[in-house]
Length: 515
Image 1 (cartoon, rainbow, N blue to C red):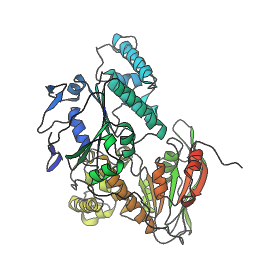
Image 2 (cartoon, one colour):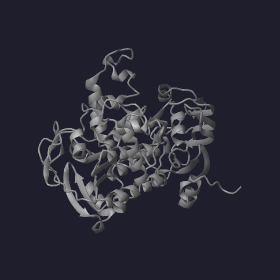
Image 3 (cartoon, helix red, strand yellow):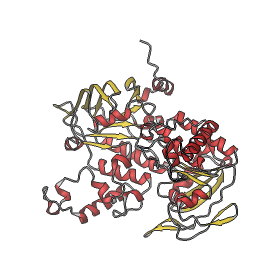
């Protein structure tokens, strides 16, 4: 299989064999070509050369419809669901079976019956009439899997399936995959989490720079060997390099913060916290317990229902504790002017415009600055694209974004390279305060090491960093101080050096300390 995008050979003479009744893992760095290969198998993209055989017969998969007819289903890293459709409508989309779509018409009746049968068989809980956009991420993924199973998939491809799941949801997913394997179906699992590969796969293929570099039986390898094969070198397992600065002042204070969602449900409950310059404050907790809303409130992305947010002058290497600037109700652009940078949790939804170029992504949010206008005129209406392109290329080189081509659309980069592009945009300015959500979601092990090092370097330069992550290991690797949220409230706080994983786990489950 060969597939190129201009000068970039995403798949370079790939050969792959998948066995029936097996879970086949595919690992590699961001940009190794894993998703491109799967998109070819699912008919989303056409290969430049190569052949595909299913059950010994050569097949031409020129569209996703052809792949579905051939028994292939795919759950994409970024779900392909219509938010304002019901679960049943999403299940039917593309295979409506007739022009009559009323609730009692034959097509919807058959689809509902099949959906309920499969949901019971695989223990995939799904309300056919629920609005998909109102479902949590784990439930949306179950809808995606049911959509493929309803269509009779015998080969199921999952691209980074646990990137946005809680540990409990991930365990439930692996239980389902084992059931599917036991029925003789084939599962292809693309993930950067080598522990998951070791726990659930039967065989693993390692890709690097568009090529297959190794195939291993899972029982005959280990996470250390796979990581070295992926990156081409030994990978450091410890992120921390130096203790935090001790002479820094307060950069951010939050008092009695309260946030409601669009349904007027309280998501953040009277949160109090402080953040010092030269410190990483890790916010831990199971997804859905108010961390996302806290981050959005601090970044000016949602309305604050009550309380105070104060950014103190100084920071970014100069200390803090000076006169504070109240920020509740400030817009994201106003906060940027105060030296507050933000890496959002969902890079595609709120971090970039996917159909625009990498150069657009590299200045998004800062595009009103005079340096990006012709003649450096802040009121100018024309962008200086040669300057923007050159600056973007320098940042791509510094943050190892592959390929380093500013003109490529942001959507064409792998998830990890999209993340590094956004990190470069926000971090190169050495902000007073950096708000960062899920910094390594869907990112490979080599890029995780790189991103962690960049975050620690920024902290050592004096920036105050508030880090939200559902990965407890990441919190423990980076944070100087940890707070845990449950049901919208802070239920515990500890210095990272004194953190006990069992105690953190109890806090994450909502068990407060006695007294």
